[in-house]
Image (tube, rainbow, N blue to C red; front, side, top):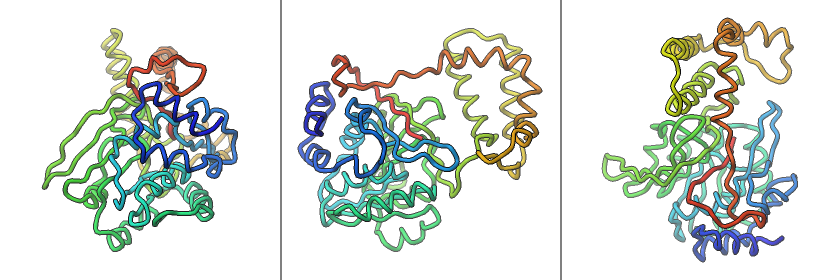
Length: 328
């Protein structure tokens, strides 16, 4: 399978790909940015580029999603582009080809393992222009290096644009990304005009959350868990009728999670079963298990996600324009 063939299938499925995007996608080898099997990629699926020590899977987006994001970024030669979340360096390498030697690509990557992987892979990549890989704490350095960005791409779901990022977007520039909760979002183009922001809704998407902090979020992080429960409950509650008493219990659980102190014990893959079971978040969930337990299968049924793969040779070209991608 070649990238040229994959791009042809994407075009046949109705994915818009201009000549600049096509040339860059064909030129950059995704295998340079991951050591994992590319079979899923050739079938238009996300593929992992890194399994972190914390147990998280980091992925390169499905080709149709990459092409879709590049289309909506409206990239021209010589532009200064920022990526929040590196995607292993692959997306940055494509954009680097598109902006050329007078353009720049600045990656803001919160997680150290991902950042080191990205730096390693880009070090042996022949750049057309300039690619920087920075941490969120390097915002001051970004302001010094750049006069602002014409495009900012957020590669994971967020609820709002961080104020520190808003200030880096030049007038007339825009931010592109998935906005919403952890379960479902809208792909929005947020354009900056003067002191105001104007949204263009580009469709429904499913991205993993983007944490712009400096550290990996614990799987028992109460705020993250509260957001997931709230988003799932809103989705399920809009489809079926749920007793008011259950609704009240869910709201109280979400509130209790959000009111938990920020200095809870940190849980990772090295934590013992005893440490996990004694964690305050687990203790809270277990105290609500009588009514919460029967609700989980219902959530799971409604939250199951079928990934669109319009570029896969096994699927028919009935792509309706939605964009699904699981991107931790």
